[in-house]
Amino acid sequence: MEPGQPQPYAQYTIRVEAEGYRPVEVADVEVFPDELAIQPVVMQPLEVSDGEGEENIVVPPNTLWGDFPPKIAEDEFKPISESGEIVLSRVVIPEYIVVHDGSPSDSSAKDYYVRYKDYIKNVASGEIYSTWPDATLRANILAIQSFTLNRVYTEWYRGKGYDFTVTSSTAYDQKWSYGRTIYSSISQIVDEMFVNYLSRPNVVQPILA
Image 1 (cartoon, helix red, strand yellow):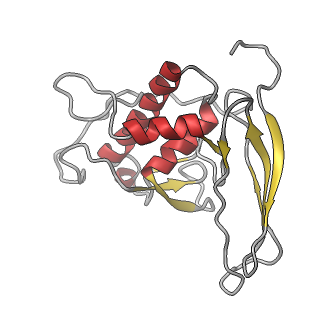
Image 2: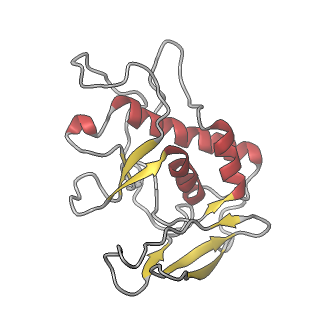
């Protein structure tokens, strides 16, 4: 809870095997004391897998502990043109968003179709500590949701010619990580309040919090 303490979580490696599927190994899984950690694993059938041997995933450190680029400052509201380029006339909670796993200009980075709620759970699990008080978790999750919905509502990247909703770069957006461990406390709050976001009077778009 206090700056300067040692790393607040332990790290483990998980290996998952199932007959007929490509094995998966997830390294640096972060486990906090007295907190249920949930490790999502997607396994590819051997007959359709495009790789040999096991799939190796390395979970990056929490952004509060690791070294990540700082966020490039942006206005909390975006100008919206009347040209019709913006598809949405109101705030809509999407079922899926497209996450570009790198900086916007990195054409080699992979795009992932991710359920909106799973995206929020992933980002929150990597940017805050699941052991924080409930009110603190809720405040941070609300900000994460509002930021994401601003990107959705304003079609921020599609308006720039890209085919994705948001990136995984902390310099531009929020830290999403393929294969990241999520936590029960965070997951339950997101399931409860995923339709919420921050707003101001007489302004439709969610705040880029």
